[in-house]
Length: 198
Image (cartoon, rainbow, N blue to C red; front, side, top):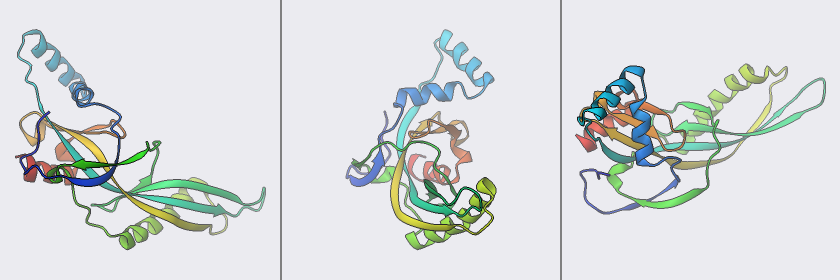
């Protein structure tokens, strides 16, 4: 596994254990499309398969611990607790639909850590704006629900950057969801690739 082009000091970040290894991340990128799968298999048969460089990256996300009471005319009130994720760079919000592994503090290369651009009050505002639309769409409440933001936690989600030599052919694989995407399709990771890995 390669390291980024930075000095060797470390910083501590709150993160989760990746659910896949660097080797598994590379395997995921080889089957992104049928054409890519075919090309990598043929290159492997002829011994021309090029091994990618693999870099860790830590992407900041806020986890918003949410409580909601839905008021219903039939069946009484319904209490819900769920997690919302707020992208600490772009401000995009969504429900956390994966189980979060245990959190841990890890010492990592500071060059591998993307810095959050949002503060907690901005996160709370983005969460509030998203919450009403989400509840209206998912639960169709008759009366405005009561809600509270119980806690906000900043987590750095581990990613594997699988570098095939150019940004357009490289992938970012989430260590949490195992989802693989082209690096250039994930704006903040594309900027990280340009700044830290090029």
